[in-house]
Image 1: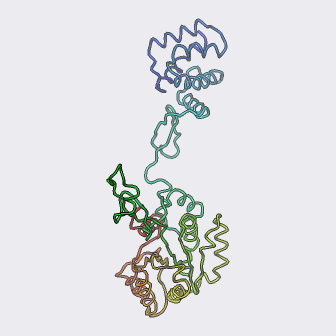
Image 2: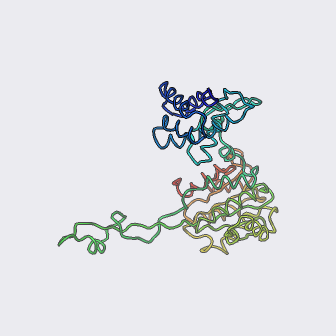
Length: 381
C-alpha cells in the first residue's frame, strides 16, 4: 500500500471537519479509486478522489485547496506518515485565503502567555476579553492620545451626518406646516376635481456653529488634539466657524479648510503666536461681538466655548458678555470643559459666571466629545 492510501484517513477526517459529508462508504470508494489508478501523477489522483467525494462546486473548490496542502505534506520525508491535523488544516486555510475563498473561522479563547496557540479547522481567530482597542482609546483622555490613535478614532467614530436645522424657506410636499392652495390647484387635480392636498414643508439647511477655542497655557495638552478634531469637522460642516483665543482673538476657519491635517496645524501655529499665554475670555468675547457679529456668529448660530474657564478677574465683564450673547442667540451658550465642572467645587468668579450663563459639558474623551457635538442637534444623529 502506497503512502497516499496510508494517509488518506488524514485527508478524509480533515474534509469532514471542513463540513464535507463523508462516511465509511466514501472511505472505501476513495481507497478503491486510489488502488485502481495505482502509482500515477497528482492530477489523476486528484480527479479520482474529487469524483468520489465532491458533490457541488463549493466543495470542489475547497477540495482543490485541501488536496494541494495534503500532497505537499506527503512529499516531506522527514515528517511521520500520520500527520498532525493542526498543521494540515492550517495549510488548508492558507490555501483557501490565497484563492480568495471565504474560510470558516474557528473561534478560540486566548491561551495563557507562554503556551502555543493550537489550530483546529479553518482559520484560527483568537477571542480576547474586555473592550477592543478602539473602544479603549475612545475612553482615553484626549491629551494622552497620539496623532495616529486620534486619526483611527476620527475615521471610525465621527458623526454620521452633518448638523442641520429648519430653514425659513419652504418647498411643496404632501405633508408640511401649512396648506398650500397654489400647489393644490396646480398639482392636486385629478380629472375635474382637486382631490390631493399639497402643503408647504420647511427645508433644512446646515446649522451654523461658532467654536471659541481656548489656546491658553492651562489648556496646553489639549491644543493639538482639539485642533485635529476641529479640522475633521471643518471638512464636513459647511457653516463651522472656529476662533482661537488666549490673549487675543484669531480666526481659524480658513486654516482648517486645508486638506492635510499637518498643513492645517502648521497654519494654526503661524496664526496663533499668543498660544500658551494667559486666558482673556471676556476680552475675546467682546472682540467676537464687535468684529464677527452677523458674520462669524449670527442669531441662529450655536456658540460653543471650549475652555477650562480659568480666567483671572472678578468675573463681572465675563458675565456681562455671556448674558449679552445668550440674549442675542436666544439660547444658552455651550461650554465644553475637558476637565469637567462640579457645581459644588466652583470657587472662582469666572467659573460661577460660566455656570450661570452656559450649558456645561465634559469633553475629556472622544466619546464625550461626540456626545457633546450631537447635543447641538438636540441629540439626534
